[in-house]
Length: 235
Length: 106
Image (cartoon, rainbow over all chains, first blue to last red; front, side):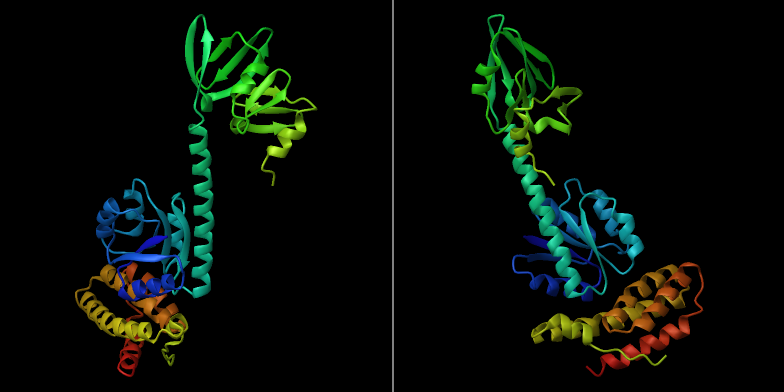
């Protein structure tokens, strides 16, 4: 990870820099005595974390946070807790450190930062995998229509047809649930009832013997329930 | 006010890194007198909000130098200045003098 330090006091910059030295995989790329210079730097460099003093003259840490469009993770440093609490509403804030910062407290903060970063990366990977699922062409009235697999919510058997419900509309296709199941990635799609295949990533909640996807309640058959439960990341 | 400053915090932070300890002492020896000058100037010109900002910066140094009681005085004084009062000026100046003297010994 790389970081920058923003603080109008040289002593504070030296202290945070020394604390960073004690974290093996954390490199201090630059130090700034004002947030405006740091903003210019951030426009040209990709930074993982910013150690930011809140209380600075002219352009405060809060002004800095408000100005950032795609903020990196931010750890606030402050002499005054009340300023930190005000800033904590911003999503990019990971933690705040009250000066003088102890080694133990700093390490806790880094631990928290690493956990949050790992979680964000996992979520990004899942999102990327979902968006990379690919396409499926279905024959409707002699036209081959392209469906994005990641947009499919539920597939329901309707006699000799199936209804493919996507985020935008429902497609009525002459085929069987068994045939379409063979074309779907098993990691994402799961048959939970003889009449339903669901996109596992679209589940909102599960209650007793049904799942909720968008506003649709879908039954879970007794035989399919164990597989569904096995796949859940249960707490 | 008899609280004496010390380098306990900095020594703990530095560990075996003597270079950092020395570097830090140089930084505080440079930064502290400048801030005292700024403080005096703000008070002379009756710019109490500017003085409050400088006290805010100075109070962190009291913490670094393990002066907890002095820090509490600075904290109260910063609030006072923001409310257009400088009753704690004399006490605060005593703290600044103690630190100035201390910095000449390290």
